[in-house]
Length: 168
Ligand code: FAD
Image (cartoon, rainbow, N blue to C red; front, side, top):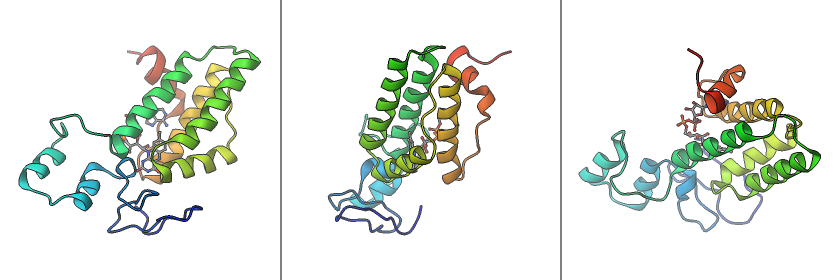
């Protein structure tokens, strides 16, 4: 995580021990991992550690942290590309661009949203066909993967991952 965050609005951008704050000055749940968020909001007890660090996550459903929100969001976004028409009308192309524009403004993790808006300003949504939109989304996801130091996904496989299932 970066040690400073630049924000155009007045409220907080300071990171306390690597934790991203929300516009209200409090730790931002959807901008941090569960472990980082909890470290700022509670004393970590043995049971909290147990719950937060095991692969299965906490026993009760909780508001999403940055990773759960991200996985669910990518699932939705790639699934939208998978169900997008092969040859969309101009209206459908325009709707999908509007959707992506609004999505990037409303995304609950504000630091993620700002970077995604920057990406979209430099890489206009390509949606003249399903294939083009699927590739664009894959490239957008890879941009975040690179930023987070994750492995890049092979975009020639986007449709197998999100629409048809893997070839044997
Ligand atoms: P995810 O990255 O969530 O991927 C889910 C699955 O998608 C993978 O298992 C893989 O099968 C598949 N996949 C991976 N890459 C691709 C690709 N390029 N194309 C198609 N399929 C692919 N987190 C932050 O900490 N900081 C951020 O700034 C940030 N920005 C984000 C911006 C957006 C718009 C979104 C939707 C999420 C963002 N996230 C951010 C969350 C982050 O991208 C991950 O979702 C989160 O770290 C969980 O990662 P994961 O390893 O479980 O897999």
